[in-house]
Amino acid sequence: AQSVTQLDSHVSVSEGTPVLLRCNYSSSYSPSLFWYVQHPNKGLQLLLKYTSAATLVKGINGFEAEFKKSETSFHLTKPSAHMSDAAEYFCVVSPTDNTGKLIFGQGTTLQVKP
Amino acid sequence: NAGVMQNPRHLVRRRGQEARLRCSPMKGHSHVYWYRQLPEEGLKFMVYLQKENIIDESGMPKERFSAEFPKEGPSILRIQQVVRGDSAAYFCASSPYGTYTDTQYFGPGTRLTVL
Image (cartoon, rainbow over all chains, first blue to last red; front, side, top):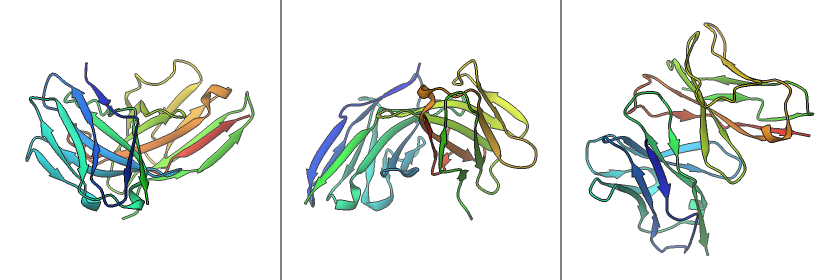
């Protein structure tokens, strides 16, 4: 069975410092992996996705993630946090069985302090 | 190209009433998915539909919940005889091809409150 685990429920950084949001997945095959962001009371916006091409994926707003098969990880990073990055972030796996069921992690709340 | 539309954005119902949530997918998308987000939790898959067909409803509660995506018009998620535990945010997503590499684009959600 496929699953995804976000290792931190809450991350706090200062504005201008790096961001690291950790995600591990479990899958028998190479799945597609996504990071979505959700601002308070809003819908979900796609940050980036991995679909077995380049292992380093660049997304919007300066975010990027690296797919590491040996570590079954897909951590999200950003070199310098902005206040506007404060939100809930979800790591998501799309299983290869094409059922359409995205499997969401529990989410990581990113707090950015001035 | 308009995004995924959901209405209403907020819905208040009393216990025992019916709730109808609507979702219009992005233009050109024929695959629709419904997810539920309970407070302080991630999203959980409910149902996957294509036009006039339910492809996978393994995440739907066995009773009171139903979904459809008719040939014309939006997809509807219907909850009969709502209970307080149904209070949640319900998100609809759509995709063009339905494959596992597809991006699902999400609507703004409908926040259901059951009094």
